[in-house]
Length: 314
Ligand SMILES: Cc1cc2nc3c(=O)[nH]c(=O)nc-3n(C[C@H](O)[C@H](O)[C@H](O)COP(=O)(O)O)c2cc1C
Image 1 (cartoon, rainbow, N blue to C red):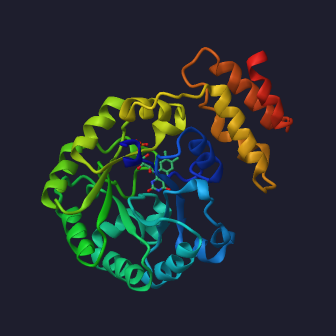
Image 2: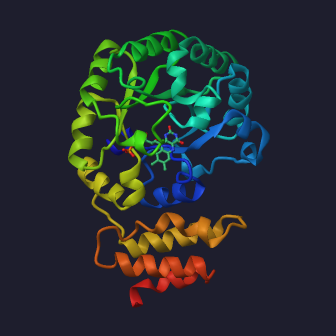
């Protein structure tokens, strides 16, 4: 199966438990990611109590920070909470993250990153990976990345997710950092050739099933963020194209299963949090406008979510 070589990208404000539930309704095989959480937020908030649901496997939790000891403290809890993998964020360019000296700026501090990997591998046996960029600012030389991979693989990290563009620190918002620095898949491929024994997942602007297939000829996995968020039914196209999976659900069936699933979950969340990930359900179809209107109304007027089940009758 090729679908289990694909990953949902970690996305703050998006890949929460509800979006993950929606994805799992559509596919039981695509790999899941949590949103990024800092080590402090994990250790000192309710997040540490969240136990992975059995439907969520394979799921990675993404951690950000720069204190190796905190990573190992988190790792012990994470293992017990059922996550399959820890991913270390070395790609976030936001000014807040730069101030905290973690995220993408750790590309310049491979010694700290190696200590983080050592701390996690010495104290737990949970698999780990690093999500990073090709380089920093406007320098297209791959030395920083090569150095990072050389040092961290030597102490136990065998898997790298490469967002195939640089991170521009200071000056560009995180949003612009996902479109302005240009995508360089060829440079990511060069890296795989330098480290043939390591595992590489490619990420960045991948939104067509044909390109996923092409990338899988070169890389061990493909990670997709915005395309799946904007158009979750795209996952069905991926399953058909990559694995010939014939049985497809209608959008209404997906909706019903999603509503059933969230109604079984114990939560006291607002309609907004429960429903906000459904705006893309009718993406690029004639019903899209009508669907979004109904969804907006259900959220803003706090209507019963069961009203959505009648959508086909509108
Ligand atoms: C709303 C949003 C939030 C994101 N949050 C994270 C994050 O928490 N951690 C991370 O490593 N990348 C984050 N990213 C970047 C994505 O993981 C991914 O690298 C990027 O969007 C490129 O992939 P895509 O073109 O398939 O969307 C975020 C992206 C978006 C759009």
